[in-house]
Length: 291
Length: 145
Image (cartoon, rainbow over all chains, first blue to last red; front, side, top):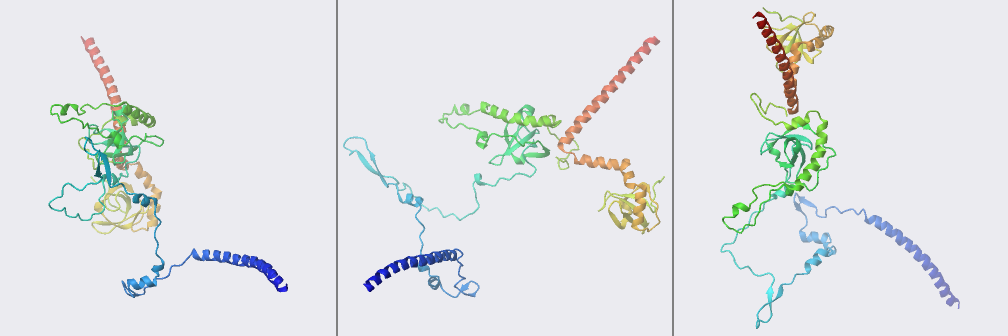
């Protein structure tokens, strides 16, 4: 009984001890875990295990380094992403299509991707690599420092040449969105090219003016009809000869102009200035003028 | 024939060179072509300057030849040369020329409008006077007859 009790007691003790022991090692483990975690986080990277003999030449070969760095232990695969899973789902290679006519069997099995029907006699040579050749849509757009929203510009080309006009913003293709305003000099909301414009130092305060967001290059692009079915007599008639001002353009013009006209009226003589046109006369040299 | 002479104390206007546009006083003559020159109140250090780049003004200061810069400055400030210079027509013309060169496009428009209005007013008055003169002439002719 003593030794029976002893194991019981021992058991109890052990249990107790175990609990205590569990508690202790648990604590220890916990604290060790914490220490380990703390130790894991700022894990210092080992210096290069490949001493340098001369510049560019190491002591050990690739295979020796593989062993020294224990890469055999460090084989990782990235987890398979959803995209890869979707890629594995291959589209079907063949499709069955119904076929008309009796005695034909009703359907055929057709390849989805067929072999090419023509091979050129000479192979096209491989093109050399080029870099930095971007399509127009990705080009960098620059804007002269003298052109800021509200600047008065002088148009130099186009049907509105010589007219003074208010700059609103630069569009995505780099062209400048510009307006007369229409009531002042009959220049509507229009695009102008930066290179064919003189920027004056006169600015209109366009601080709170809201320009509608749908005024983009696509809005202003010229529309060409492409439907004539090659009938010689009619090709020249159907293409839009007369440009018609749509109601949307009128409403957009009004929305922008009312805001700008209010600001123009505040500056004395600015309205008359915008109505006038720019011209050169005798003794006036553009390189000597201060705009 | 000549009214302005190169003498000690003559204030000159520098027309070209690194100190173009500034006033200096002639302190001493070095040789036929150069003078010792000083402009304490106009930012010109005491130095030799050829006569060719100087244009004489009407102002003369009183100090002995080769006087120290301090004395030149005292004389300059006593005569108030800077203010007197700004009041001359010469200086005003220079200023007007500078302003004209700095005119922006908008300024040119405003000047054009102002000139136009001024000329209109003048013409209007002129025509009034001419009309009166012609009326008087007609009256006297009628009276003579």
